[in-house]
Each structure stands twice: as structure tokens, then as C-alpha cells.
Length: 75
Image (cartoon, rainbow, N blue to C red; front, side, top):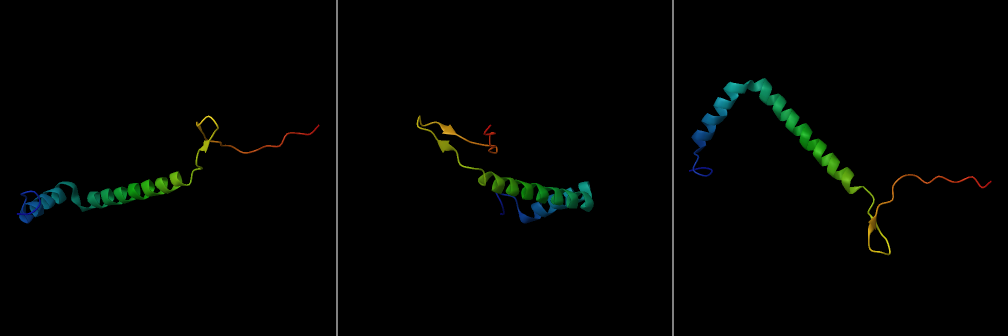
């Protein structure tokens, strides 16, 4: 017995049927697309960690400060 009552021969037969239905080219493209999606997800997770932490005000509320600071004219 293999995974959850499925024998290794059954898994091999299922793999062969999928290969015949979709072909090697489509499965290769699917694998590449899946790899690209995982890579993009990891990159987005790393960029999300780089965001500034929220500031805590006196009232205990979180406040995120964004944007750039501009100087006012002293005229």
C-alpha cells in the first residue's frame, strides 16, 4: 500500500494518463508557470517584510507615516 491506499502502480498509471492527455510541452509550461508564481510570491513576501513598522501614538492607535518630507519656504 502506498499513499492513502493508492499503490505506486496506480500513481504511475495516473501519471501516464495525464502525460498522454496534456503532452510534455504543456506540462513543461505548467511547471515553469508554477515556478514563476512561487518565485513572485517569495519576492512579495520579502518586500512586505521591508515595509516600515507602524508608529504607536499616545492614544495607543497605530499610525503609519508615509511619503516624503518637503521643506516650506521661509518667506
